[in-house]
Amino acid sequence: NVLASAKCNFDISIGDVNEPPTVNEQIRYVEEESPVNTVIGEPLVASDPEVAINQQELIWSVISCKNNNKDIDPCPIKISFCSGQLSVFNPTQLDSDKLKPYNNYILRVLVKDSSADNPMNDTAEVTVTVVPKNEPPTILAANNIYYVPEDTPQDSYLSRRVNASDPETDSAQLTYIFTGIVGQNPFDVETNGKIKVTGALDYENGNVRFLLSVKVQDPEKLENGPVDVEI
Image 1 (cartoon, rainbow, N blue to C red):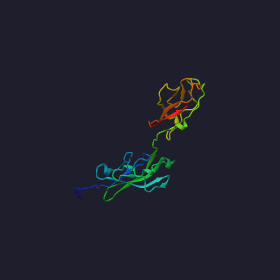
Image 2 (image 1 turned 30 degrees about the vertical axis):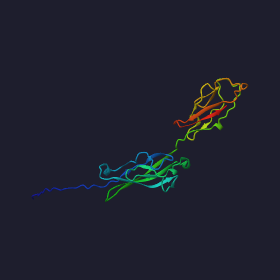
Image 3 (image 1 turned 90 degrees about the horizontal axis):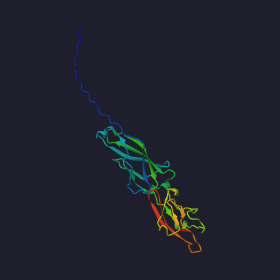
Image 4 (image 1 turned 60 degrees about the horizontal axis):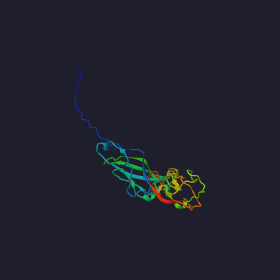
C-alpha cells in the first residue's frame, strides 16, 4: 500500500471579542453646601481592554442614589457621562446636620463601553460622604463677665476660662488671643483661655471694672472677635 499525503495552508482569523469594563467600589468626599458644579474628588476609575488601546470609550451614568437606604430622586450628585467626574447638583441636600447620622449618599453607577454591536457594562457602589463645613468659633461678651475678689493674689488664675464655642472643635482646642495693650490692666489672657492676674487689685481706689479685648481662633485659623471680656 502506498500512503498518499497532501499539504495545505489554512488562514485562521482570530476575531475580537468585546470584553466588559470593570469598575470597583469607590469613595469620594464633598464639603457640605458646596456650590452647584463643584467637582467631587477625582473622576471615577474603571478599566476596559478596548478602551486601553483607544478602540472604545466609556460612558457613565448614575442608576440609583440612596441615603439611609431611601431612594433620593433627583440625586444631589451628578456624573459626567464621558469622564466619570462627580459634581454637585443640589447643594441644599448637602447638609451634614440634616443627614446625620447617615451623612453620605450611596450611588450605584453604571459604566458602559461604546461598542456598536455588543455593548458591555459593569456597575459598582460609590459612597459620597458629606463633610461638615468649618465654621468660625463664637465668643460673646454677654457670656464673659467675671467677678474677682480684690484680695486675689498676683500670678493666680480666675476659676473660669474665657467662654467660647465652635461647632466642629472642642473649646480646649481653640486659641485665645489677647488684642489689648499688655500691662494696661492687671490681667492677661493666655492662649488656652485662662485669665491670669498680673497686678494688684484695689477696689477702694476705684479699680472695679476692666475690659479685656479678646478674640478666638480655631485650628484652621478661622476667628471671631475681638469682644470685651468684663472683669
